[in-house]
Length: 274
Length: 318
Image 1 (spheres, rainbow over the protein chains, first blue to last red):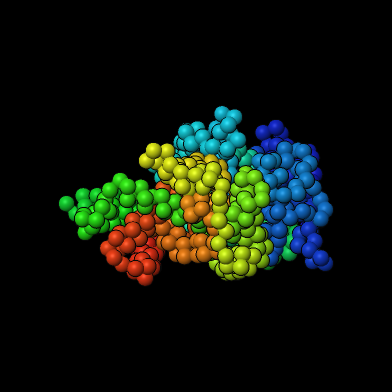
Image 2 (cartoon, rainbow over the protein chains, first blue to last red):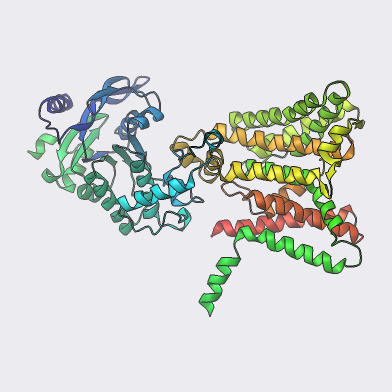
């Protein structure tokens, strides 16, 4: 069953994409072994430009392993990853990042003591162009402030100013800064690992809005979530992992939350939906 | 009315301002109570700055270790070892060689501290407590508890005894190291990565900052500053002895803490470290002029550390 699915996906990716639907990320038959344990078995899927795809699965289904392969933390045992149609091979998170893949974590990876501008540019600081100051690593705070202001506008956010300290922001606003940082770095593909797990209802809604906004700007999103309502609202498509295999690849318009739960637990398969 | 009060208090009761208020109050207190002793004269105040310089330099250095969430207890013993290495080498080698070797004592010990902490993944408190003992023992062993005199007058001038008119070279050293410390911490990429590492190491790591390297460099800066402080002691006293810096640890930590640097990382103030160290110097000087002994000075230092940490903890819970 899973082989059929992945075979079908591979066909899809080769034939039926128009320019508008070009896959930003393509994963072909990826497997990952830890010793004798096969955490991922022959997983294939694609994400198009500007598409929001949910990555679903029970604990231990292989979601984290898959994400770690894509973000360069693990090296997959076999199979291939293609970005904009070009095969890539990541040996470190930096290499993945340099190909435009950014990861946003659930635990709000921001520095509370810094202001928004400093967080947006963390480890991506703009350095003064003066040769001597450049050698010292002198920060060009003006340039960063100006760009931070533009970035905040792009995020359409309710955050008042780039000079606001992170510790004065709500959880939702903090997550917006994390996502903003990923987008600001020119990421084409943003992987979000449970971005709303630590947030309340209203703040989750803000993050959902933001995901839709960045996808409308052409950024592809791979969203890991246990919240089916969240997935139904935000995603265009969902990929379900079951025991390390991609067991389903469904459009949101074809399923309801109950179907998704069925697919995740293995109670139903993709065939049962049709 | 009440709202205005809240706004005002928010404006003036910032943690980073406390050290200025404290410094001013201490100065005012001694200026009044010691008005007949010449406490509040340019000569005496300059003297305080001069005598406090090694503490100031150590405080600026320790700010870097604290900024990334580490502490370095070995700085006091680095002071003695660096001063002794400089003094011994200056007997047989040219001055620059001796100075370089003394400063390298700090660089190397900082590196060893850093590597041990990161490699063993043990708290910096324990690792540097250990290296503190080892270094202090080495200083005692190799000098047989004897003082080493320094007769090189150029060295003594540049590193402590000299002055340009009323301006002591030690004051110039303070300004210089303040500028270097302030710029490194607040204006450069390294400073930002350091504070990010101290503020949220997970986030720093997630965005690709090499937190281990950042922390090791911070400990090397801290230790190097202590080595320079050792040379400044040696230059002022025209010699070195294993007791140099022995009693400075508490003073330095109290100075940095009262200056607004969080002892657990993420928030640091170089200006605060300087003012904090001057405050400690004024208190010492004032207590001596008031006729108190070193015992009372020790009590005062301990109390200040406790108060500073208490204020900081209250702020962090907000």
